[in-house]
Length: 92
Image (cartoon, rainbow, N blue to C red; front, side):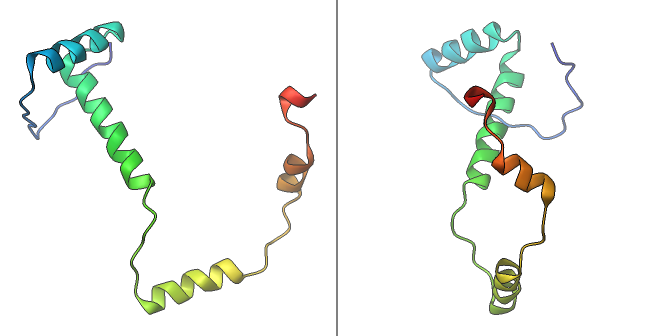
């Protein structure tokens, strides 16, 4: 089991007994304690939410810089070209 690092910000939640029992069973299967299991699951979901953003609000200057980068010619990348032209391992 991973060693707990110093934690300085408490997070407290209330749950139904059935929810706590479910979490405890899953944590036990992974040899984790409830806190570690819940914190890892919550952080993983938080990362997914942040990575799944589809709308970004920026000012005109930032948008123009972004559009310039998108429209710039692509540099030749022989390694990438080789990769894209190779068969997938399951196709060989």
